Image (cartoon, rainbow, N blue to C red; front, side, top):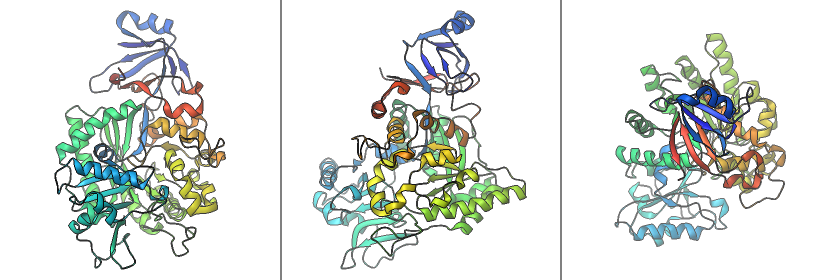
Length: 533
């Protein structure tokens, strides 16, 4: 038995919101559970004679936080890539040049994070990358993961030239002469991905094993992963070897639906460390490259309404097949048209579930970045989850105002969703944004960037959340969508002992300081997996 004594424990359990001490029964394999919470006197009196006591010195304890939308494999591998999330285009190019100096000629240079809407020059081109890395193929993905920037050597390796047609649901950007510029959108990125040397299974495992520590240090004890087969294979081997000490809900790509159903897999298969979630579908693109599907054109682009990858009818067909096989759906939808189509599909799916005698699956929409006003209450009415990323709002606010105009009022509308009765689950979409949940909490509470912009009130301040509302979206919300709300998401007797110790009390901290908060220790299932010292 382990007792954490003399702490300020915010349980998020309405039956016992605060406690001073906690008794934990450790179990090998991160299965340790909470036995009791209460005052120091009561817990010591009941368990002190048979327990090891750790003095917490009055520090604050919260339930462990979960990132409800992360690309874990991409995040892990990108820790060693060029950081293209720079204030200027010149800084990004300098990062490529610096890496080119230290690697063998001909080796690929990878990077991630550029945001062309933050650069006065806008999109880069192949010639710029050629100039700083003439002896290497270079490929940098945008922060959105919906566009890529390649140099001439990379384009040649992928066989992309003026005669290459745009693939379905993709576009090769071209210059005035019709030559590929070096920028690829959506499915055109697959042409490049097909020729880039892939990390080996062992390299992927090593990167993900190491990346856990980065996430623990931020206060994360769980993630909902949206990467594909290679990620799942690495996670399974990490779990088998005992090296997976981060709770993972693994969503599966719709491209493998036939194989998934043929095997008889179902949502929830697995255990408390690694379990299956839902079937992931993309309904549209993203705001950054202006491929999110919109009901009306983008501001200043009368011919551009983005890209819709599946309409309501197509999505309903996929969802009905998945539901018969025991899976819910989690659908990427950013633009107001994409969200409208997805909600239309879910409306029919709920009828189908009832008629067929199926469970009401815990479907969710990923991102929900902008809705038509008529659709604001439909997620709640259909009991569809709003899986959102607070940092997207502060990162995208300038682009949203520029390209969506007045429609941005209904963008990133967390408070509207909560007040309508929808359930929120917050994440980062890392490596699109940092997975640091305290940066996300700051964005959710203030609607401001770390530098204070756009001002004290924040961007569309009516959508700000209280700290507790935002915290629930990193705890109880993800637990519910993982089907684990009876053992995760709060600190209560019988629940898994997943918790974090903080350097200060976030409930008594100025909102501006939330982004700077840090965990000092992280526990998963009764085992300390990380300590600052």
